[in-house]
Image (cartoon, rainbow, N blue to C red; front, side):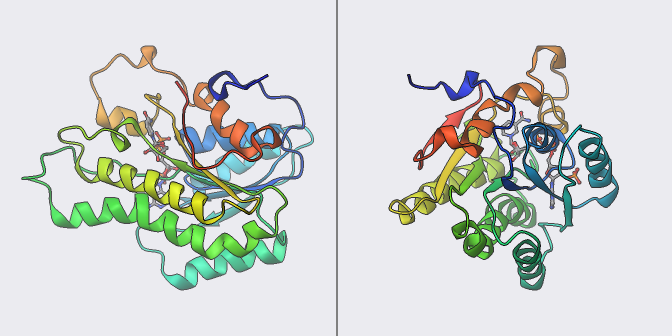
Amino acid sequence: MSVDPKTYVFRPGLLNGRVILITGASDGIGRALALCAARLGAQIILHGRNLKKLEAVYDEIDAIDGSSRPSIVVMDLATADSDAYMSLAAGIENEFGRLDGLVHNAGILGKRTSIEQYDAADWQRVLHVNLTAPFALTQVLLPQLRQAEDPSVIFTSSGVGRTGRAFWGAYSVSKFGTEGLSQILADEHRHTPLRSNCVNPGATRTGMRLQAYPAEDRDLLKSAEEVLPPYIYLLGPDSRGMTGESLDSQ
Ligand SMILES: NC(=O)c1ccc[n+]([C@@H]2O[C@H](COP(=O)([O-])OP(=O)(O)OC[C@H]3O[C@@H](n4cnc5c(N)ncnc54)[C@H](OP(=O)(O)O)[C@@H]3O)[C@@H](O)[C@H]2O)c1
C-alpha cells in the first residue's frame, strides 16, 4: 500500500535512536518538528541563533516522558565562518559518531519588493541564510551522514520555489535554488543509502507567515504541528529509498 506523506500517521518509537539536527529549531515549524521527533524517540540537536529560545525548547523536550536530552548548537547562519561549521561537525562526531537526519528549516523572508527596488545587500543576506548556509552545513556534515544506516536530508522549500511570484525576490530565488541543491545531492548519492528531499510546508501559522501576510485571518492557517507529516515520514524508515522528491504538506 502506498503512503500519502500529507496524511502519514506516526507510530510510537518511529524515530527511536535516530540522531537528528534541525536548523531554526527555536521557533515555528522547526520547534514543532523538534518536539514531535523527540516524542517519537529521536535524539535531537537543536540549532538556532538565540540561546534563550533554544533553552526553552530544550526544557519542553526534557519534560517529555522517556525523551533523550537534546543538544543545543548556537550558530547564526548569516555570519558563521568555516571554523563554526567545522566545530559543529566535530561536536556531532564526538558525541554521536553519526547523523541520521538533517533538516534544513531555518530561513528568512527578506524584503517583499520588486526586482527593480531590491537592495543588493538584502538579496545576498537572504540567499546566504536560505541557500548557501544549507549547502555549507550539508557539505561539512556528509561524513557524519555517511556513518548512518539510513541518512535523510530534508530541505525546506516553498510554493514560490517552484513558480516565481512578483515581489518575492531573493526568498523565491533561494527556494528555487534549494530545490536544485536537493536534487543534485540526491543524484550524487543515487547509489548510496543517503537520500535528499524537499518539503514545502505551505501556508503555516508562524512568525514568518505573519511577516509576509500581516492582515490575513490567522485562524484559517494550518498550525506548525499540522504540517509535520511529510517531515516525519522522510525522517523515518518508511520512506527508505525515496530521494530527489519534493513533497507538500498541504
Ligand atoms: N510559515 C510558512 O507559511 C512557510 C511556507 C513555506 C515555507 N516556509 C519555510 O519553512 C521554514 C520555517 O519557517 P517558519 O515559518 O517556521 O519561520 P519562523 O517561525 O520565522 O522560524 C524560522 C527559524 O529560523 C531561524 N533563523 C532565522 N534566521 C536565522 C539565522 N541567521 N541563523 C540561525 N537561525 C535562523 C529562526 O531563529 P529565531 O527564533 O532566532 O528567529 C527560527 O528558528 C523556512 O525555511 C520557511 O522559508 C514557511
